[in-house]
Length: 220
Image (cartoon, rainbow, N blue to C red):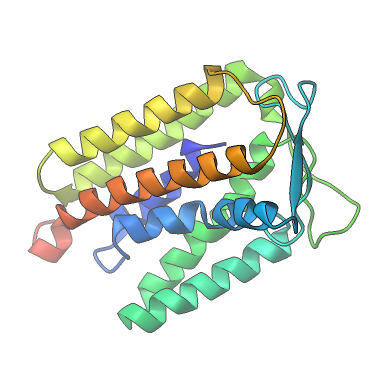
């Protein structure tokens, strides 16, 4: 799952005016992937290209105990939630940020083939919807578009920035699904992924800076 991970970010921003801004929530949504590609660059975690891995994604994510185990994701969630709380001095903001981070493992569990662990052990988990594109594609689009619509409905501001963000998300997802995949995993792929996350985060920050939650403005 790629843009589907941002659905909890949109939902968290929509649910409460005390939520962190959208840019922060976009970091939360992909925090464990930020960490994975960073650790892959230095050789701590690893992946390889295997065209037979799944029908949709040729990634064999065979070693990622510190980011994509349930325990590892939980640790990242707690750390990020505490950081947000320390900066914003708002408990609900920290909790929402932590929940968005934690959602990453659950969404990956739905789409990944069994390559997720509970605490880095040998037992692996994943429902493997990447092998069922006719389910995975509508699911990812529907949760992302639904959460985006809820966010726009619950906030007020210029319509241009969120539309541009949505277009960026859909373009990147189309490339992820239908574009050519690399022949091998390496620095180029890892940096490319980090750049994509960075571009989307900057766009989300722009959107969040230009929209206000209706409840914070006294609207119902």
